[in-house]
Amino acid sequence: MPKKSITELVLVRDLLDTVGGQDAIELVKICEKKKKMATDEEISKKMKKKVTDIRAILNKLHYRGIACYQKSRNQKTGWYNYTWEIKKDRIAEIIGEQQEENLEKLTQKKNLEADYCFFDCNQCNERAVFEIAAEYNFICPGCGGSMTSANDPSRQKELSGKIKKIEKELEILQKMK
Ligand SMILES: [Zn+2]
Image (cartoon, rainbow, N blue to C red):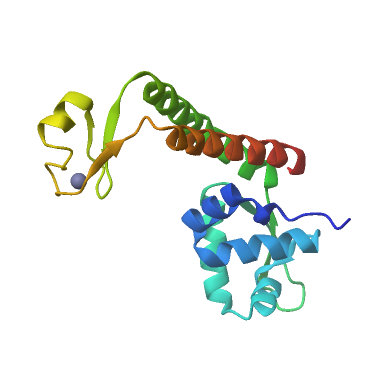
């Protein structure tokens, strides 16, 4: 079985996209495949992108500790070569921290919704308890959208599904780093 790329995980894709943009995903995938450290020129050729663009992405990743480089002087030209490496364990660390908080929030939301009867607007983020929503005839006071119960089984299922998906990815990530 071919080894899976870390970039197949939604959480990883989201993080890389946020830090370095869409191309950062492809860049990490290429570096992962190469195993040995890659120079910015090599990456730029593989991605068919300008080397300055690649450097910009690498710098953004470096800022978050996701990419690190080694500098060496080219004996012939006197220029410096930069070879880059992607830190998978750092990616796992950042996502772990992010998702810990996210999971807590989702679980809280899930428990809260199981306990209370909340009504959510279908169009904006307005949320009200039953009494208030009923007062407005289940029409959102903010935008006029209709308000429906947040406490229905499908919402609970949706939240549980979200939580499970995150937990699953975190587990895979721990094994891949
Ligand atoms: Zn609304």
